[in-house]
Length: 229
Image (cartoon, rainbow, N blue to C red; front, top):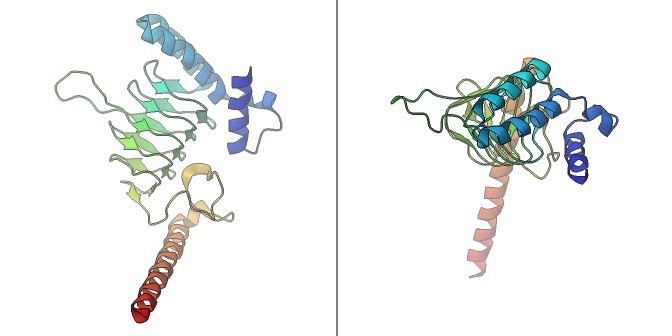
């Protein structure tokens, strides 16, 4: 019970909509994860047909398709639904995925199944509509913006946007940011998806200014040290 309470509280920390823990128990993402825990145990025990049967029931009830073979850590949160997670996907702790995300795989050229799906490390956020494809790694604390298509490894703390996804100059986990950034996109509270490019450029400009100020201060310090010497 303590573990369930901690899990529900972790969701409340990322979603201000629910008014109680009981309300969170109605979330399709919570039920999809619960069904997946059962299916994954069956899969690991080589009861593949039963694992698939549980998977199909879960998909019918929640509109979320998590392959029984996928490995999922603690406090995983799917906000809303219509998510697809492939067989060899690996998801760490405190990962958040929004609606209409695909963790998709690549077909092996030699016909031999292997690692084909992404690995999401702890604390990563995948925005709505994003497609993360292939045996790539999304680094710890990285964020993937809405509708991005990611086909290459993502460094820890990076913010990815666009098709194909590219890293912006905005770094995740800065001191002036809130602890959790919804949808993985850095923006002000007045963010409008219609002006996403302008907003991201503004954020990049602010980041460049901070870096320039830091470099100028460092250079001034070096000059003062040289003068004293």
